[in-house]
Length: 185
Image (cartoon, rainbow, N blue to C red; front, top):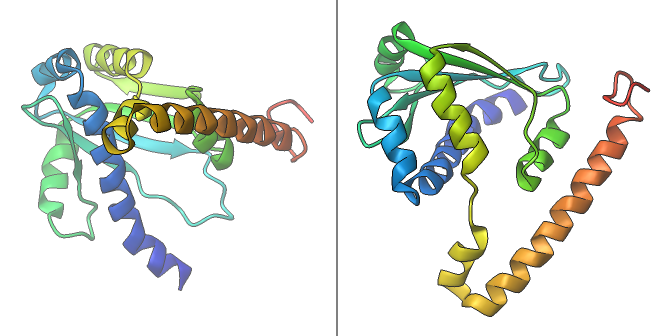
């Protein structure tokens, strides 16, 4: 039952994540310009070491659009799967993220910590993706200011950063108590 819900929910969540990623990229025209030479190429994102107790996550396959943004290529069982076959034939880059601790991975994303990554494929595209990861950040405060005004947005962003930092510290501490935790316990 959970597997069925999960398989229905995953593509929708991936689409929302890609919308957020494209929002961040589109705020910086030079970031889009760096990706346009790679239009038509694909990037496969795989979560390495995903805990077997959790429902398995499918790989995320992204195509780079002529505008310098990303679009998700549907999985084989989804509508539009014929596009995936074409994209997989031209896979330019495979990115494997260390997902052995999903909670730490998610909290690290909130605090700006970068996960351990393995990259295979086109070196030029890998360099551009690395540049994006190093230089682009979501300016949440700016987006909130458009909705709430600058003062409430600043306060909310400050509180959110404090909470995210505390949760990340908690997750790092919890990782040391589990067998095989990163701190060698």
